[in-house]
Image 1 (tube, protein in one colour):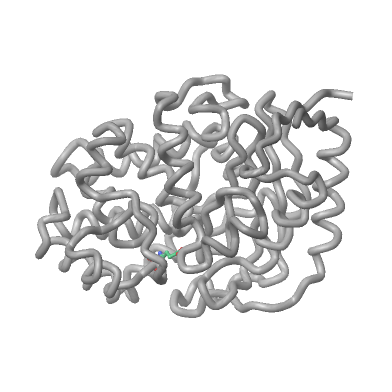
Image 2 (cartoon, rainbow, N blue to C red):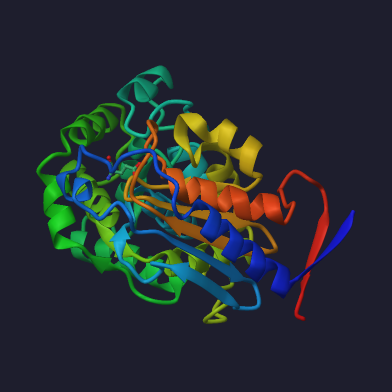
Amino acid sequence: MEKVIKLSQIKKAAQEAYDETKSLTGGKNANYIPYLANIDSNLFGLSVTLLDGTCINLGDTEYKFGIESVSKVPTAILAMIQHTPKGVLEKIGADATGLPFNSIFALLLENDHPSTPLVNAGAISACSMVAPQGDSKDKWTAIVNNITELCGSAPQLIDELYMSETATNFNNHAIAWLLKNYNRIYDDVDMSLDLYTRQCSLGITSSQLAIMGATIANKGLNPVTKLQIFDEEIAPKITSMIASVGFYQHTGDWLFTSGIPAKTGVGGGVMGVMPGLFGIAAFAPPLDDAGNSVKAQAAIKAFMNKLELGIFKGDTVKIIND
Ligand code: GLU
């Protein structure tokens, strides 16, 4: 079916989705990272970026929160830019684990294979793949520059979050050393884990994440800066990874109910990619039992349902200005 949606309908759907989910309660801030436990749990923002560069921002969309696991997406893209999608598939994989983000069991079950760059094991592995090998400073610059290009503006390291995570990431140490044991880490172990921890501690806004989502939805062309950030062929690859594991063990339920591939982070952010149409992001700190923001999920679902959109619907959708 050919579906035509007016810009005014999109703005209205975003406003209604925001208003209806604003007062939702439920969930609690991530408490295993001390910094995150203390963030104001009432913060809430919803951002949509269309492929013509139109940005819709409602609520706390300029608040810089911890990007956390949403950072796995840009670094997976960077690894694909530097090593091709095939290289990432061979060295890390692209499978869903069906298990929590920090599962050691998944690593053991998958027979020494990290599965996907969008869970902790694969993300640490992806950081180890970032060029130039052996140079922490230049690797970090590459990671941050890539995020900056995808968003059209720079993220900012939250030092307190970085220190908080570094002091408590014992589980991730175990994952990193298991990866080393299985020859799935491609640079110094401690350096790779540190880069992963640091990228998770970057402060980002929902308006920046919506632009990143839109850049992926737009086949690598940032719709705001109009710069081509990555090769077209990477867009369906990263979107398939987001679709298959973006919500960890709740990914199937999420896709079934929302119809949009999206990636979450324990900082409360969710970034969605609607190929050929828009990027969307929401942020609210309280999380469900799998580490996914309760309010951000509700807001994005409400937006999708109001516009009757869904990646599996098979509709050809056109957005027009009115
Ligand atoms: N830095 C967090 C960790 O490694 C990220 C987890 C997440 O956002 O899912 O535990």
